[in-house]
Length: 180
Image (tube, rainbow, N blue to C red; front, side):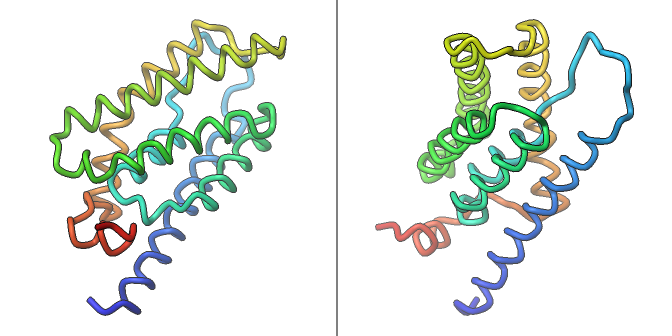
């Protein structure tokens, strides 16, 4: 594949990622439930961001992730920048492990992502508590974290089968990330 074709494919996939997150946010903002619920669904933005960061780090550059996570904070009325910063750090950490996870099995990938999901959820709650900012009920946070853990394999499979986000090949990773 020529460099021009490769670059246009990368930009096309970045546009698809942006559209995917925009669609998820659209459905999250729809007023489908007017009464408070005792449960919460998975954080699909997190699941898809982690799936794409692990499998194709070149499709989710830091600037795009920061923009989308900040937009998510603003639209979902969270403290602006806190969740975005934590998610950006987690995604960048997963992107830096892409070479290692590429050769590892799915269990290793899932374990790394699970550590990030739990770590981000816990760190977010701790920071909100330290600064005395109203935070979601712990039970809802735990439910959402568990639901996100369950949703991650679905997001990874959907990304691979429907959107063509396969694990990066060794030559592609070296070319896109300036590897050795």
